[in-house]
Image 1: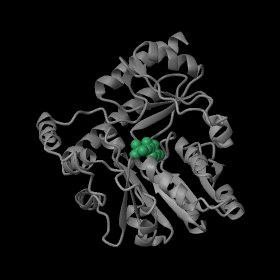
Image 2: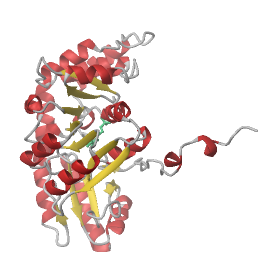
Image 3: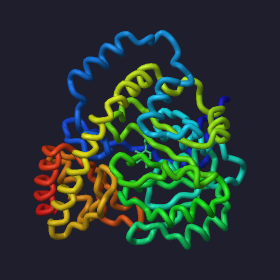
Image 4: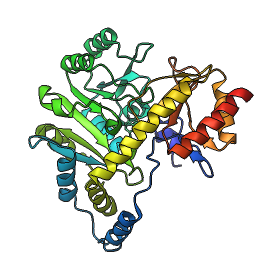
Length: 358
Ligand SMILES: *Cc1c(COP(=O)(O)O)cnc(C)c1O
């Protein structure tokens, strides 16, 4: 008699709920921090040509030399740092977690933050230790240092800017935490393009620090490309855990081409930052809405009757993210991605109606 899956699958995996993605068909999609702008037609045609001629019968270049050289140039990555590529930065978190997963090893994160940190800890068999942020979403340095002292985490991951709260943590507070951590520290800069601060120029100050970025929020979410920048000694170990062909042929070719468009990418990020300012102003002007300033391409805001407002928006054709009930510090909170000016106007109209109806 063969065993049932439930007999062989780990208890902590069976206890997980599936990662739920809302069906967005027919809706204005402002739930997942995607870049709303199309690439210019001429560039899309060029990409079409590149894809047509790509050697998809061959395995990809495992080292992805050209793409890494392009990343190094566009992101100003220092020659003494190495780059590790992932199928999205989610995969890089998984590689890091697997690498440190000795029995009893701990991944420490702050909360509320990106849910994948805690989930991937479970996948890899790590203990997950969340430390709550202050009520204003700043780092609780005292509690974080105490937790570091207590659990001696093998890995600390902190998003900068943070998702879903949108804020940049105080750089000195973060530096204090990096210095106190006995193991690896990774700063996840998924939203670097919309923020005015980065730890990339400071990597060499901290021997245990690595940095992660992704192209997902920049307009290439469908390609799945993330990268980690770190010390050669660490990256060499992590490379052993990377599946040999994790970044496919088409992603390598298209990402390399689009990354050359530095002016275009900066202009799109600039437009999103301008729209963010307008959207924030509009949200703040609503009675009963508390909006939080953001350094990402999204805004967290809180209302009473959040579930009804979320459903009302959906009925009016706009999908955002409902965070009501996911964390003690996020009661009544919703998160909207900054869209095109038209998207944002449609969202504000739908929000106004939904607030009235709720
Ligand atoms: C969106 C997001 C990611 C995931 O990026 P992918 O490269 O698409 O896997 C990682 N970290 C944070 C904080 C995010 O918000």
